[in-house]
Image (cartoon, rainbow over all chains, first blue to last red; front, side, top):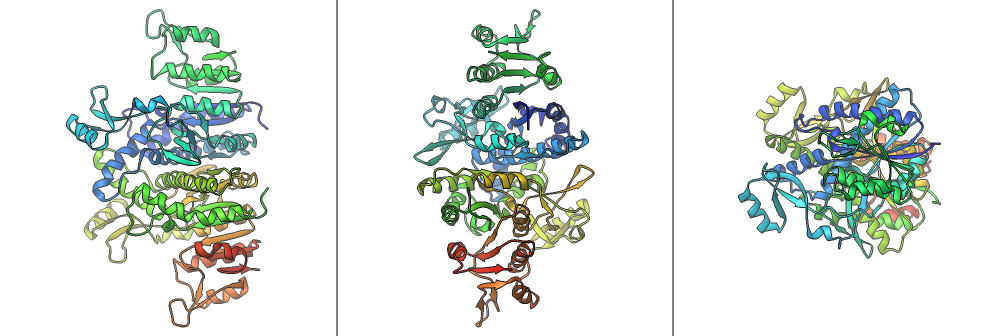
Length: 315
Length: 315
């Protein structure tokens, strides 16, 4: 039996960093490093649910969808590309993690990857205001033609070219939650909620196709709450959330109550689309009954669990 | 609780037939039909593990891997493409099946898709003799250049062009077997072993990358045996295995013992790469302790379970 359940969200850039070759070998190399801390946490006796981003991978799959059309293969929609990336990353994480577990003499654990869907509300206001850029870059002329044809929204993405944007609705429920909980209770290490989960809406028992991207930290919080995990850990590339981040007087936030953290959040301290949604998820997890939310880097994750590093939110 | 466990192998051509548009919509339309019989079996009280082929889907993904290279995305290897197809098909089957369960008033079942790996022996003689054609077609000239560069084997595939061939080693163990068994015991409908599973070899705790395709019926038999399923059901496009198939005196094989079936098999009655491996898997399942192996069409599956149609092998 496991002592406490920890849901760990791993950033997609831990699997493939900007500028690296987009090969299988490179991703496996990155994963062999990224999973080291996970193995340490498993050895400490925690039940582990590992979630992960899929930005670089689904981006590549979307480009391939576009490239394949000329060779007679119709592009599959975004939800299918997300499902493909869950298979791809799930298998790679599984491989890296089981090898490392073996090296560490942990022979009684299985790592399973579960295809995960996340329920959203098709009347979520986010659907009226798409914000998440996805897939290939286009010229302005191409984007105008595509917009006229499909009604999809295109934006100039940081001067790098035009990209389609899709909504990022609020995740409501992880449809595979019960199965995930049972697997981790029985000692499996579970990989799930890849890329924030495949979004689906439901109406009278029918699923509606949804073209959207779910924030993976927020979806991980929903899963962690739903299955009564004790700890939510968001692993990112900084050791802490900061007050006055990037300024000369920046100050790492250590252990704080959610009341204190809400004040810092309301003070506008966190970057939109970066630290802000992570802090939001960390707060919500505690509000809904979680014991501890951690935001930290891989290097500080173990110390954070020992209450010695990272940003730690408690009631 | 479920009464008996049945492992059902669904042909990949039930999800996408030759000549059909290779779209998401077409595949969902096919799946809404193909899953009807599965729902009937669930309603009869059986615990169901559903496995499926991935030939058309992984074929399309392989073409996209080739197409994407010109746009800067390196081709991912076959094992990753197989993992992607498990995500893709798992999600589609899940969607079709849960909608149909809802329509049938079955509200207490969840359908979960598990990424599945299958262990093979890297010294399997099949690795010396690749036989399974995969991926895009090439001209003879292109195939010669590719062969010289990669040492991969290319064959003329039925006059349609040259294709790479990969080995089809024997599946030894489904690595996710215990988790699959537990999920189905608890009432989940489990989708697994997609495309015969992602083949992996293992040496001193390390996984070796394997470029191979596993026969999905044989992998389903290995799973069914491993998790002590009572029934193995191979769903294909004919109602029965036949003696003198295609001749004027052809005779459908109904209920037979494995001893009788072995004689028919030894008599050379079954087509290699088609009915022969299905019959082989059906026999092995009973030899290793299974109660009943069925080979039949979707239309006859329910009657076959009631001992009234299809080819049924017993001890």
